[in-house]
Length: 325
Image (cartoon, rainbow, N blue to C red; front, side, top):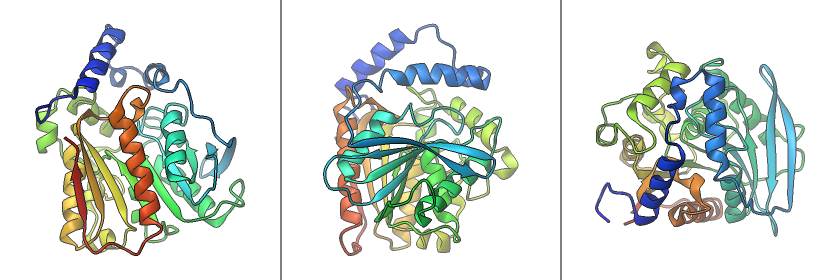
């Protein structure tokens, strides 16, 4: 497999998706409700054959502007820890259903309870609405407020894409309850559309530069993009030093790849001991595809190992970066 090219499995999946989705409009060019419905239908194909859980509870949490639906996913066997999971979708699409299979596998691989949360979506609810919702859920979880009585640590916050952005923004707030670690998957950390990966994969496959620009326009106008809660790469060194241990991953064939590489470079320059894994031959959102994609299953297993390691061992003295080939 050549650098920057899909793996054989990934290429097969991309070819089939192109055939299945032929003729469908770009969901970011539709009215938001129609785009969400199309995204939900597309993600349904990755949420079949859901892993069995010891328990799945549907609950609501009091948010800043109404009730926020959450799903508490409990794995079988001994349970250790609690993770808040924030779904991706450009701050505008997706919910706890579109990410259900990945969340269930993450619960099994970490051995932790995972709380999969919905939050208000752009463009109807632009920044900081979704972040405020996530912060409220995180505070309720960490303080044991209803409906989270009885859940225990170690505590982590996790998310993919825009969800990783919001998760990191929650942790950058010095007033937020602390986490023991964070698991962040192919996140949005800056608003620079001219990075190496944006240039290389401007047209995708999958996520494109134009789609990300429209997502940003919906979520946070230009004059808000220097705010580290929108673009965490704008955070100060002091704010980054104060973060808990981070496990980061990125997809090689992804306009957002450089965001994670830049974040990791800043963390290393600060002498932190975070972890970064680059998954070769896969596209943005690949962890959704665990039904068919071995690299997705590997990434979820890696995240499980990272959670157990980061919450059970003394801090590492050196950072680690791994690359799949």
